[in-house]
Length: 415
Image 1 (cartoon, rainbow, N blue to C red):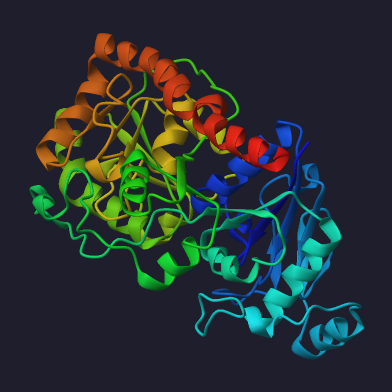
Image 2 (cartoon, one colour; image 1 turned 135 degrees about the vertical axis):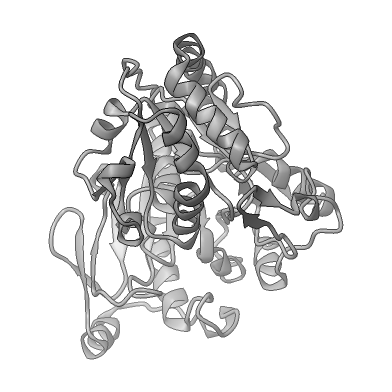
């Protein structure tokens, strides 16, 4: 068994989907594999105004879950302390490490001296064999050199510079400005790169970025750690022409559904008048329901699986975002639902990997045609439904997604 410190500088698991789902999927796999996962959240207010933090995931399955400057109100619920309360709590802490010499910089993305000090104290108690730094927590890496543990970074999609995509009535434009595969000329944000070079392993979300890292940082190890799911959830195909879009109110989701409803949905409805789209999640705040045009704003739901069960297909009309397969794409396939997405939603270095279960279309006319075909062509629809299982096993099962990562982790911990 390997003991693992799972460090977040922001409570990503306070939200369903997206980054929270990705990170919790990794932690869940490690726990299911018999390893002791100890979660550390160093700041629940970074980028948030609410002092309350409620995990949307079963963090009680882990060995422990620690939150700085907070009191635990329940199994998954925490309340942030005021500044004075936190200061008194810190003063009572015994054996505090002097972290000032390890502090790495200024700015909202960097940990404070207090955060570094708190993490080092917690790690001294947990005594993990390895730590996993999630997203912004990669900036803890320069501070962990004296701990002697193996350090893994899950930075999420690398912050590439110069990636531009324009969107309009005809579809995604100027895609030639973003190479199909990232070239050596692409560069990662300097501060992020400095922190990443301090870790032992970088887990990247797609083959495109793994290739880049291995070419440019050959002395460092990189493996693909994509979005995985514990099991395939086959669902009966639906006859009703119901389309599903799921998303939080992020700029990427808001732009995606706006483009779809403005330029694609009218054509779908013209050719398939009975079609309706159910929009689930906080993204509904930016959409106006229109029963006459088949648009239903569902909002937050207690059970998203029920929405997948009633949908015939899923759409992920992404027009902006980072490289690699998106969580919403992987989630749809894990529920046995065919989908239509854009090139923004898939891995540029693995062309065709989703073809058995999905259509990829960047032009509005092609996107609409794919949606209509899945709603009206029963033979095509059944073939895509069947294809979701094979794509899931190959691309999104826990075994396919995390095996290489776990092998490295256990080998290094044993050495």
